[in-house]
Figure 1 (cartoon, rainbow, N blue to C red):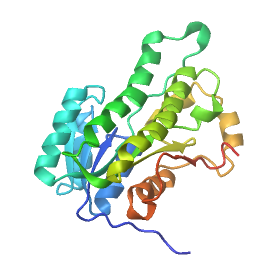
Figure 2: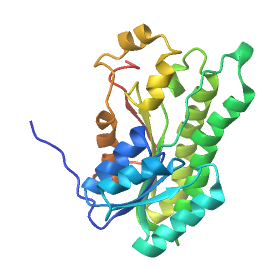
Figure 3: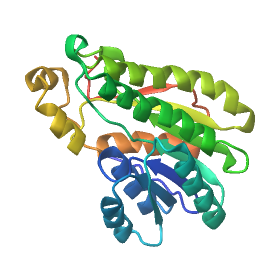
Figure 4: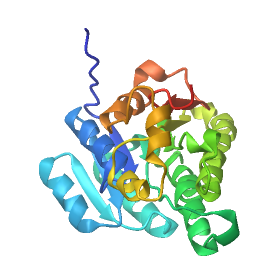
Length: 248
């Protein structure tokens, strides 16, 4: 079977949620493909471990993605040092169980802030002409939960559906500069976040619906890199499902 490889030599990307899970996997693959990467997350110690793997490729910024001013400063500093962006990925997110009868409203709002509003701020910062190249590509992480609406996850599902709707609208705004934005909807992927969630989830039901089994980060990162590449220049405003058959 033929293998797909990507060459992002000379390209520059920002990845949020880069200290673990999908964000870390994407930052690592971009660096391996020759890109310069700004890795953004709160946990500096985790970011330094990632940076140590690719000291010439990865720049880190230990900031909260909900702090728009700090994220903006980190992006501007990166652009001044490396050049304008060719794209970015908002992979930051939190998963919490929020049953209607006893949900924690603070948790519910935090889920929306991290997954949705921080993503909108991210796009506002990165798509500016002074920051981003023409033709830049952006990917926001959604989830199959946006469509499946699993029990006890109304806040998470709502935040991810908001992402899906937003990219369709924003795609129309940024297309004038050839810029693109899409969302990616992973199924159940093995990450630290899903390990914690598994304790509160009916895993038997999950396993039954995952026709190809529980996924690994690399099962999703290939699709993300494709959307960032010049082979996807005619794809924008789309919600791409990569779920091992979960929604089949």
